[in-house]
Length: 368
Image (cartoon, rainbow, N blue to C red; front, side, top):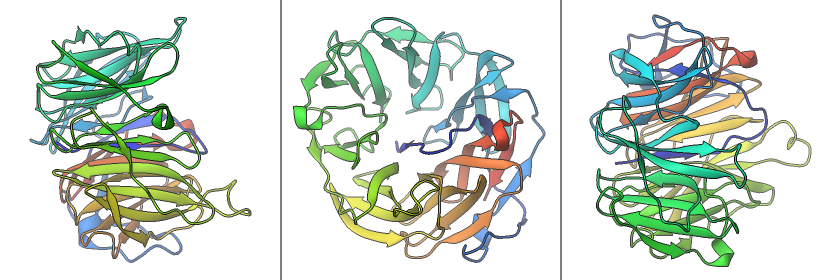
């Protein structure tokens, strides 16, 4: 089971639900400096499901291709079921609080975190569903983790959680029985912090990204959360953000590095794509586009990645089939801002995207 995590930076917008699947040939004009359009990077806009939805969250997909996303429908949270055929249904979220899907090891089993930010001290809870989000149950966490930051489950039984205690010390916990029992370890002080994403491509290897520090921190465990080591990412002068991470099955990940110089830092940066294998960066390559305001990535394999970037509130889709050596690009139609992709296999993706100018319009993007 592979998952992606993304750090948003600069202009925050409101999300709108999006869906991807195979599509007929269609293209739009490209932005300046982007590469030529290719057949494998076609996105079709489909507005068959238009509701007053806002604050939608990045979809989470199971290995079988079923995806779930959560959104705000007229002030109430709903769970949205997505497949390659479109939206298959939606129902009220019964978890309460501010929920977020984090990992779906099967088409029915998902885990998520709900944050109760209004409490003092702030607290969170781990939730689990076995019917694709129709019903949720609370999973007891170790007492040392009162604020869970993120969770990843490569199988229905095996999960890793990273979070903090009231003193803001960082802990890692793992379970092999779906949360009935936990093993807990405290991270070294040098690695302590808020990890807003953990990705476990296997039941032994996980990666976690701490994006809110400069420079950002990427860590890896090879014993399912017991010990963590920092992955050294060679940054150039002016690079300080690691703002998107996606891992494929096994031991590899794609990482987006954001850079900016003194004159452009207020308006956006330049991207580079780094490939991480066995805890080491094996290559770093440039990504087309300048003054990028935000970026997100999904890599279903070592050679295939889809990367979205926002430039002047316009969303661009880039795709590579050769591990980042070359990218094919497409600018999405006017009105679509930032888009988060999630690809279950090369050429099959769903996504969640921002509406431009805080629009709550629902837009589906079919990718093939």
